[in-house]
Amino acid sequence: MKKTRISSYWPLAIVVAALVAIAGLRAHDEAGPRETLPVAQVTAEFARAVSYGLFDDATAPVEPASRGEVPQVL
Image 1 (tube, rainbow, N blue to C red):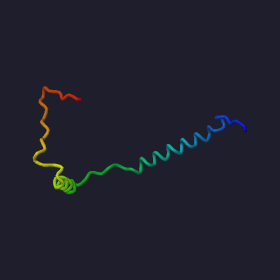
Image 2: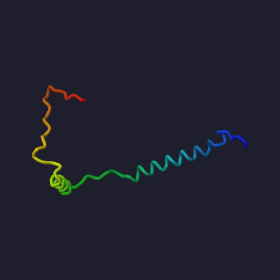
Image 3: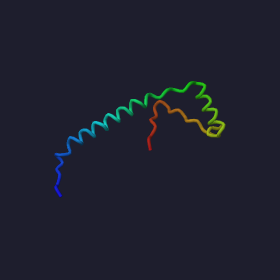
């Protein structure tokens, strides 16, 4: 069995790398920017979350940090 060297496969590697790069760029372009939701839909989603019980009166709001205090990250 004849041993093949990597020097015989480098053109194929360049072609494959180029095809992968092109496919990645096309997939990125097709994704497109995400559109913002209209206010009515956001309100409906929030109302649905409240009706499912994800928000209630027992949920404590986040306290605002005072000006001199820096929050510590755990």
